[in-house]
Length: 122
Image (cartoon, rainbow, N blue to C red; front, side, top):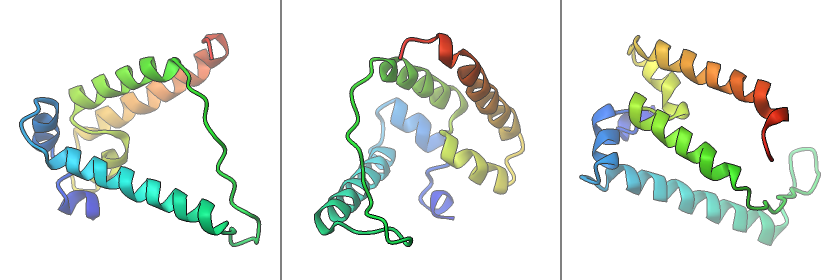
């Protein structure tokens, strides 16, 4: 519902973003980054525990050049389909039936990656 009301599933909003015509989607993305960063800071600072009582540990991530290639492929798919993976199911729920083709492509891409993962440089 939030994705729909914020127009994050709107192909036109995504097209505006990739054409640098509107700040709308960048604002949503930056808000999500800010909320995520703040949440992680709070978890680390207060040493919060999970519902099981275990301390929540967020490991550091090392840079991987594969993220550049993966991000490029992800961005191209996003630009071509007009939707990133999260809103795919919101679009389906909103009754946009052609999105089934994109969901199939995303699932196929995930399967291909899992098949090729052992052969890829990580």
